[in-house]
Image (cartoon, rainbow, N blue to C red; front, side):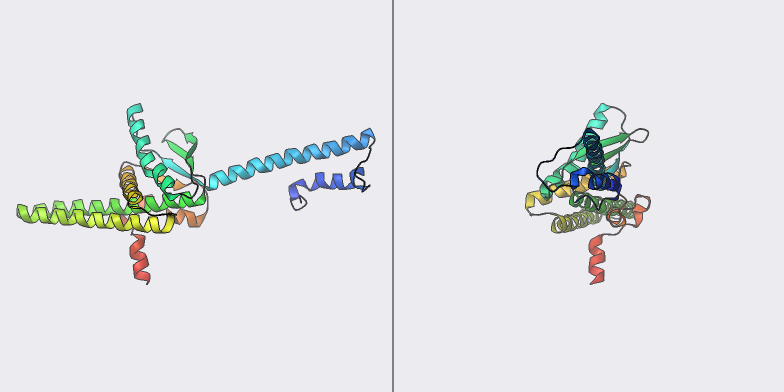
Length: 250
């Protein structure tokens, strides 16, 4: 079963050429020199297999992880608040998704604080990517609404009309948030409920605020297709909703 692993070929060949395979009986006796040769090869195989298993687990852990750049924190109080934000942004949606994802902080780098966080499954990474994309869309729409409101004020529009404009903007933003959240649930959740939808909308809004404060959430692996699920933080003003893209493609 192990012969296909090139790294182990040397030890496997030693065993195949040893006295161990010379006799087909259930019980055999070996001279000390033969016994030592077999034991050494078996021990080398065990070490090699243990290394491969650990390496495989590390690769899997890395593939199902994300890198998070924290916003600036000045003290433990601000760090605690950021931690609560990430619980809303990541922990709760993973629990609602019900695909076996889990959150485990693996490493933290100095300087600008980057956390490597294992999410347990590829589905969990994809869900976080979808939340980040939707959050970037909401952030852009919020910015556009503020620009529109500032421009409207320069036109000396009457207060009642101004109030109507502002309420219309809020309603539009809420509709966009609803649509983004519903699409994520449809694409990523095993089950749907109004409570899960409300929690997901809060997660999207929280990530939107975190991005505004300098947070970046990226996949830790090198898979190109997974990277495409996450927004390009250097071009956030150009991001478009995936819902619009799907509609235009039909």
